[in-house]
Image 1: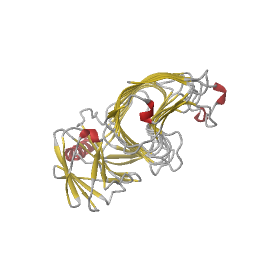
Image 2: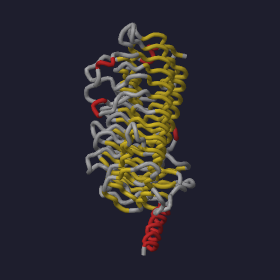
Image 3: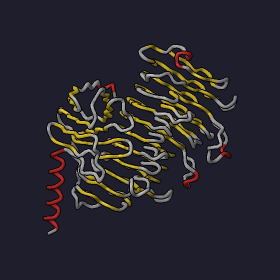
Image 4: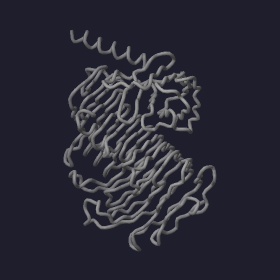
Amino acid sequence: MRFLAIVAVLCLTLALQATGAIAADPETSPKYTVAVDGKSLTVGATDLGAYAGFDLRNPVTVHVTVNVDIHSVAVRPTALEISPIVAGRALTFRLASPSYLSIEINGDIAYPLFLFSDPPRTDAPNPVGTGIHYFGPGEHTGDVNLNSDETLYLARGAVMKGQINIVGSAQDLKKNVHILGPGIIDTRSAGNRPVRIRYANSVTIDGPTILNKDAWTLAAYATRDLRILNIKIIASNRYSDGIGIIGSTNVILDRVFVRSNDDSIAVKSGKPSFGWPYRDVSGVSVSRAVIFNGPYGNGLEIGYELAGKVHNIQYSDIDIIHKVSDTNPYRRAAVSIHNDGNAAVSNINYQNIRIEDVTENLFYIGVLNTTEVEDRSVGLGSIGKIAFTNVSVTAPQPVPSVIEGYDTGHPVRNVMFRGLIYHGVPVKEPQQLGLQTNDHAANVTFG
């Protein structure tokens, strides 16, 4: 009987994977329908937009219908140069390779369609293998605590309603742990953080779509050798960060999509109020990311809660498709470094960044003495050796940028812009950028 049950699970999984559709979500969107090469996908609903996903092996034709007349449509990232054919309330386009898209009808960014296409997976484990937690198609309720040498696999069509914990201690690290597969992690009704990682080595998260309403979505503290790949996050709470890298080293984020209302990708040293002491951060690489940031955070953020050394961080090939502002403008930005502690922040590189829409600050780089810092006793730090190379800004309206040190002993130094293009015009002078600086920001150069 056990053999027959396993066969049944595998057959159902293969059937769903053949259609490539995300499993039926309890909340489905009435606004959109989606078909890929004539096969209908289930379109789920969130507070921030609808979503659908599928496996893409070869070029396909995508057909989307909407419950309103279409007067305009934007498919982002615009760097992909996807131009749909519109007919009435339908649009059609070809998709040649796996992509994470925001499809925006009539300028509506409050409720777009997020379309996620991924390469077919070849890493599904034996469902009854040692150390395997295999969730096949259907709904699965309850938290999962992963130990060393364990794997959680979420098959296409699986919807997990619970929290995933990879939590060790300074004396007992969790090692060689994996969360894999194209299924869904949905904690919107549970009121907790979807993925918690603390005191761990050699962790891989590859594939899931994560839906969240509460606090940080995926937070890793005191973790070494972490890989976050092919992740799609929709997080709607005011304080729901997307991905938090906290006091961790040797981290790779590649091919991720984050729609969050708070920080989309944040790098921090610690979080004392959570019981996470400050630790150094180094060796973080973020590449091929699509960022849609809401009104309460930043797109690419280093800060707040910084102390010790924060260095050797690389951002490359990133599309910031929106950075929405709050009603009261503040220090939030598309790209930001908020050093509110004693950290020496250095060797931060941004390369091939495309910024399509921002309505608050474009860049904000500052050493701050704020009332928001959790541990004022650590003192103040500095920022230096920041490089921006090949950054394109096409945001329709001008917004300010800020680069400011705090005082002579806590400066910002050596910020270099090379190949910064603003609406097709190379930026050679700070005035072109609307840049605000002070006497404690030195050697800010353009070329």
